[in-house]
Image 1 (spheres, rainbow, N blue to C red):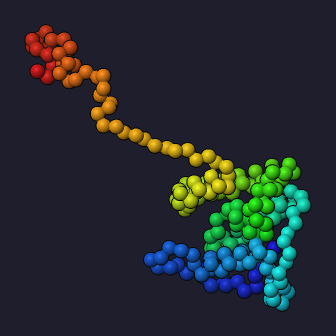
Image 2 (image 1 turned 90 degrees about the horizontal axis):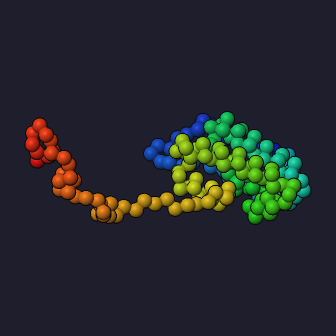
Image 3 (image 1 turned 180 degrees about the vertical axis):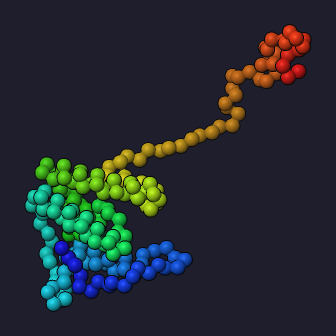
Length: 188
């Protein structure tokens, strides 16, 4: 697994009054991007560019996913929050989303990719339920990556259409029996 030698070990610094990534989170994000395009550090800290990965068997992809989750766990231990997602995994694995989708259609890979997608969706759903992922981002991600179908939820309220065919208050009062003790109808 790729572990950059230039990692910063400074404490996490919060940005006052601003939302966004900390310096350490940005560094981790950029390292992940470099890793995803095949840029590695050599034994003496130099950059080494690797050719694209060939994933021949489902076991290869499963091991890459395990490495991805272990990478996210290492980041979390350093207080660097990276939310697992399909694009992040694809980048980590050095493959495109298109290649990932192609693998998903192959019999040997379909069950594994379904399990990977379910694991990622489950973690994102928990983060969404806690308000960490905005609802619109979560919905878009579920539609694009996990084949959830978007349905339109709407409520239409029309004024004065609820009372069509119902008797008026006057008609209801007229239909009520006369109170025998007082000689009149209620509310008269």
